[in-house]
Image (cartoon, rainbow, N blue to C red; front, side, top):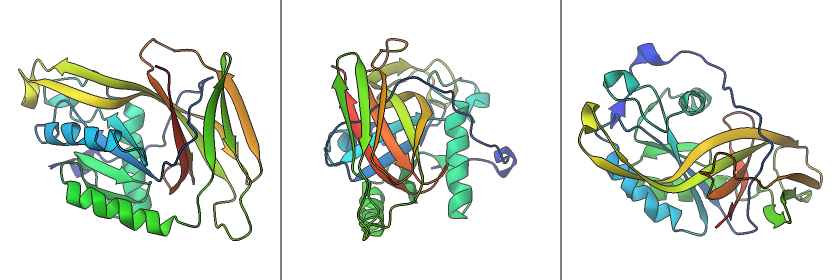
Length: 247
């Protein structure tokens, strides 16, 4: 586990580029597992490989979120986004524990675990699913012609879902192999799964029936899958998610 130095933990507000696309799939996704990783981190390859197990689970949306704060060690991560580093810091601030490291998994926006330790991840999934059992939003995505359609249904009075949720869209590349030229993993070929290439807010859910129509274009050509996440605030509990493969 590679800890981020305290000096590199500034209070930064997240900046995500607006995007005219969205994602989700009607399904039974119960957990969102975000892996914060870096090509410049020697502790990360086992976690990168392990994520494939969660990618294969139909009840889990597993995402690789490459961070940029290890780039100074000699290798610039080819997929890293400053927004992902900021998102990870916001999670740590929201939890109040200040724990920012790689490889780190954040589960359902609530709990964190070492990304190479499946027992920790399994416990975090079970724990957070229990906490969110009566807060879920029924989110779906379908493709209709040239459009993606995100839908969320009004929940019953017994449901404690947040009154307002941010709707995030992620464009995902399903798999890629990178040959690392320098740094802690210099000379290694590393394979990544469900790499988030872009993420942005595309709407806000206010507790009522909602539908968002967005163009189903392929962006930069690296979008294999779309995913949608309904989240309480910038780094709060994730109360709904869905995905849609474009293949």
